[in-house]
Image: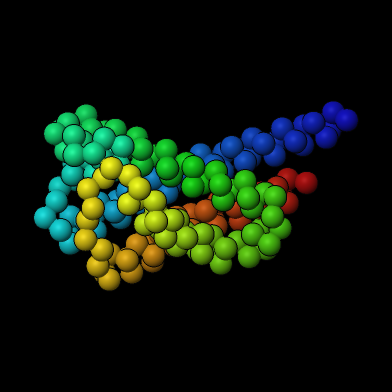
Length: 166
């Protein structure tokens, strides 16, 4: 019985570590991608990108808040990154096909996150931005790579580590 409890604890600890690592990687890599893409394709600043994220909750007032609302946008970005990681990693721990096809599943999940955010964004108070083919294609590919790939690697490495520790 004690062995079973220790194994469950180790599994939960490994899962928490995977979520933290994946969430941070998604936040950093995804944030860099979003910021670089926005700055290169539109006349915006780094501060504007994170203020725009905050505007989903604050509306136009986010753009008058300076660094404070940009930091709030960064916090929202981090929270969403961790939620995205939690959903996939917990789903992969329960659904065998996600583990067996982890790279394909995670890439599809990353692209799906982009689609879901595109569906949800109009229901926020963020100002509407023009949707172009470039924005859509970039979003699908970038989220597949910068969300899906880190998740796939995290789940795959955690599974390899568990197998080696037994």
